Image 1 (spheres, rainbow, N blue to C red):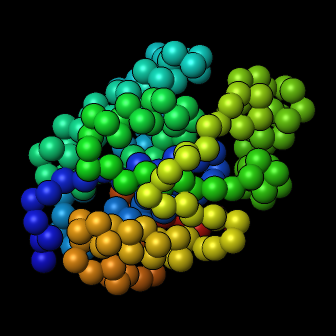
Image 2 (image 1 turned 180 degrees about the vertical axis):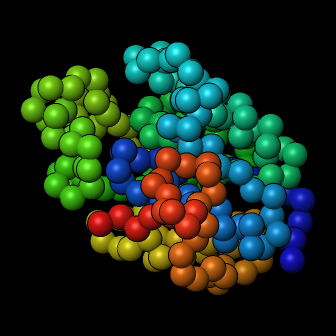
Length: 209
């Protein structure tokens, strides 16, 4: 049953590989199952379309995040449950999005560079950055500013995606955005097509090794 017409934004922030898109996909299906109009604004996908041509300077990163915030605000004020999952490394820019959107739930998805480089780096980008072969890499030689007062912190080194999702749903219920925090979706999930997660031949989200 539809929970009402109030839109909101869940803003996942954290290092590349921390698990933002994985949890965002799971949340998307949970919100759809509740009858909510739901959209995902994924950092990589936005860069291919809305922010095509932008580089990775601080100014371009800020522009990309502010564009995501602008679209999220339009969706939120029109009653859409909006999920954003860009790295969004800079506190000032995230705070600007919070002020613009208002109905804003910031979720910091924590994992260390060491953990990601060792176990979640299929393209070897962290290893190259740590070796100095890539420069301007967030969390290595470009800063990531940890949120000071997020609504929720998820530690993906200490818990699995299902537990992380449960924390997000509990937080949304506590803030009145959903009525029931019980998970409604079990098993493999059909890929939303809105994130850069790998997709199987059957159209489902691929499980990471």
